[in-house]
Image 1 (tube, rainbow, N blue to C red):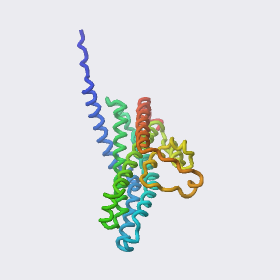
Image 2: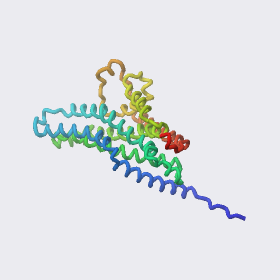
Image 3: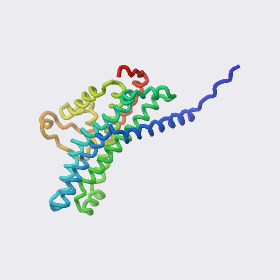
Image 4: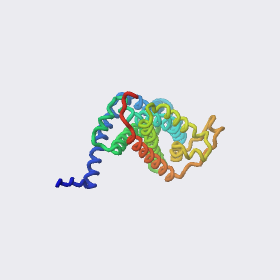
Length: 289
């Protein structure tokens, strides 16, 4: 009689998956942070930092500090965050980071190494998604923090301390960091799926960008199918639409903060699930790339 195969305990299986995921995560993080192709993403993250710090340095050396209004600079920061940092910086940064997680493996003809290894597709997708999320959140979270600090660097310390500790300052910073994190998770999950599903993810990414950019022109009920709508619902400072958007679109009622966060998390989880299903059906055929 042949001996029965030893049963593998669920604890042992989970330990194996965790070890594999951590190994993949470490490799992907090294690739994402050191890769030369990521230099343009560094640039996107640095632009607002340079702008506000140059502004503060020239202000401290030149014009009197009392000529600046903290509330006006708070409004300027909100506009800079919503009109540049959130879009296009974080959007295009996530596009570059997440689409390349798997599409880059096809381009470099290295995906078959993962497929030949005894690694479940679920583990591979989740590990790569976590690596992309950590990379994007690190880049743009640091950018948001430095931009926030630079915007108020030219004010007297006691005034900034009072605004941070006894005013809305820390709440604003926390909200901006939370929005940045959720944007990276939600948009990143969509671009992760595109990188697996499409040989050329740029075309669907352009369509997706058009949809997200049309947020201000959409009727209120249709905006709830838009990731940007939920992100803007969490903004601590309201920025009024000006220009064509103020004429062609009405201001949609923001979602409750809890609703917006839950919707963004559900979107992220759903897109990661679809990415896993897509990768399970994927076959390596470099000749078609």
